[in-house]
Structures are given as structure tokens and as C-alpha cells.
Length: 458
Image (cartoon, rainbow, N blue to C red):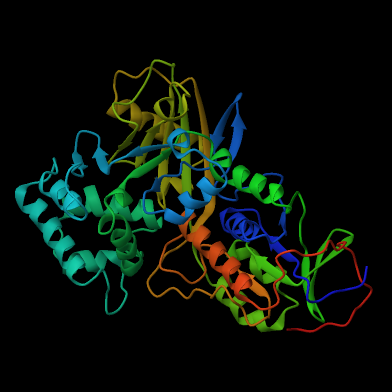
């Protein structure tokens, strides 16, 4: 078949949240895409796996109502939110220490301010200190003249240590997965702005009732395929070169040609893939400079009658930060998921030591619980980039024509979250749709080598 440069053929390298968001957005507009995923599973850092005859997630993710683009794409792919997610009005409960529950009656942001005024576990002075801080942030439109570590911002606003320990630090670790003394204050304020100060339901907690793969990755992949696209699992792209008017993607012994490419891989995998695209060298160096933060999830199986007083509880004074009852969420009776965000002493423990430590912390918090029946530790050592002040982030559109970057690390005001990844993928898709080379009804074109070794470095 002759080569038609005016016919758009879009490749998406990476089947995580960013890549699938881009693919679904293009598919919705009639663009046939091909998604290449090196692993046999989709979803990247938001996927399910099997353990002892049941499914677990590679990390216990918590969504919020402000994740509007994520929720929109889920609906587009036919996911029933009511069955897939447990929606709870904002409640931050630390076992026997602290409780903040947003008002169900007042509009935003009064519902959160009311919750701060009535928070249990804080003195009157501590509650008013938190309230003053929130009011000052709102008056400044949650914008800082210059970024700084969140710990410094909290000190400037004289936040009491108990307020920091019970409220701001848990929120920071959950949203940015970065310790207070390193976390970007401005990005943290962006999250507060979207979740607490806009729509009332933006602050709702959305706890998955089904596996992460079923929640997002598989429905979007099925949607893309139903719209005429392709999703190739277990296909590793080893090199990308520019040939005349398109890009050559090498996968094993095959070479595939596309007019547009969205590279949706983690930033630490970017440099190798763009080694032959000279204009992207500076971006590759930028990505190589990033630091990363881990997330550990310890699954503890108890007898089926064991359950927490709430679907999600915070724990303080140890390694465990949040514990979720998957029996109440997923019907996995007696199974608890304990989340430890960011770096800490636990990273120097063996998995067995970590599981023992967490099980002992649960036993101290709930002395009536019997011994565990099983344990599973899942650690994502590079779960997210370290969201530090003034972190350089590359734009989605690159100096190479028709070549885009998608991922939560690209330019945006969100930290490394599902919503941040989804937004980046949508931006890439919209830029392709806005280009004058796109053809929403491409003719089929075989993906094979063309025998042309002429290279254009972009």
C-alpha cells in the first residue's frame, strides 16, 4: 500500500492511565489508535493482581470527587460509578485521636470550614488556627508568590504540631506522596483548591469497590477496541526514530510507522526511548534528574467476621497511615489494606519485618482482633515523582512535530495522581485533534517496515 502522509496513524506507547486516557479521547472523536504496552497487564501503577485466589491492587488508591476527568472517562467507558466506587462525604478519621467530617448541609467551602470548627481531637485554639489558615488560603486564591516546602508554609502560618500531625501531614502524604519538609506547598494548595473550595462534592472520598484494572484500565481499553483501535499487550517498543513524515517504532523484529506518537511511559524510561530524537535530549536529561517516592501496601487477611468501624481509618504513632476495610468495600471479608506513603524507616525493612510491624500496629489499635491468616506486601519503589518545590516539568507538546508526552510528571498543577495522568493524556489527544494533519477516518495501513533508512532528527 502506498504511503499517505496525510492519513493520521496515532501510536500511544504505554497502557497506563495517561496513555489510555489519550486513546479513549481520540477514539471518542473517531480516531483509530494503537496502544503498545510492554507488560501483559494494563493500568501501570493502578492495576490489579492475584494473590491466594483473590485479587489485590498494586496500591490502595483513593480518588476524590474533584477527579472530574477521570470520572468522565469512566462513564464514557460504561463504568457504573455507583457500583464501582463508594462515595463518602469528606471524613478524615484517625482512630481514637481525630475526626473531621464535612457538613452534609452547607455548600463549599463552608462545609469544610464547619468540619474544622467541629473537629474532634483538637483544642479550640488548634481548630481556629486551622480555620484561619484555610481562610487566608482562600483569600489568596490558593496561590503563593513563590513555591516553598509545605513544612515552611505551615510554620509561617503558625500551625500547631497536633494540627499538622492529624490533618495537614496525612493530607500531604495522601495527595503528594512526599514528606512535608520536601513537598511543594503550591501543588498541595492546588489540591486543596480543587477539592475543598469549589463544588461541595469535589471533597468526597471515592473508595474503589472493584479492582483497579476493572475500574479504569480494562473498560477504557475495551472502549478503544470497540471504536476500531488496537491494544497490544506484551509489546515492548525498543527504539523510536523519525523517518521523513512519520515515526518508526521498533518492536522486536517489526517496525511500525505512525504520523503521531504519544509517549506515555514513566519519566525514568523516557531517555532510552527518545535517544534517537535529538531535540528531546534536554527533556530526557530533565526527567533523569527526578527523585522518586515509594508507596507500600500491606494486606492483612483476618477471619471473615473482622471489620473496621469505618471503611477507611487513619492510624498515628507508627508506620501505618491509612487502613481500609476491603470487606466493606469489595466484599473481601476480613481483608485489610494498610497504606504507607512516601519514604521512611520501613524502606530498610524486609517484607516480612514490615508485615510483622504493621500487624503489630493493627493489634495495638484493635486488641480484640485475632492473629492474621495471611499477609502480602506490595511496594512500588518509584510509585510517584517526589513533588518538590519548583520542580521542572516538560510540556506535553515536544519540539518534534506530532510527538507528545503524557504522564502525571508533565506540565500541570497536580501531583502524581490518576487525575494528573488522565489530564495529561487528554491534553495530548486534544493537541492532535487540533492539528491540521488529522484525519478522523484513516484508511487501514499495514504496520511494517518501509525500507527507507533516511532519518530526520525532527
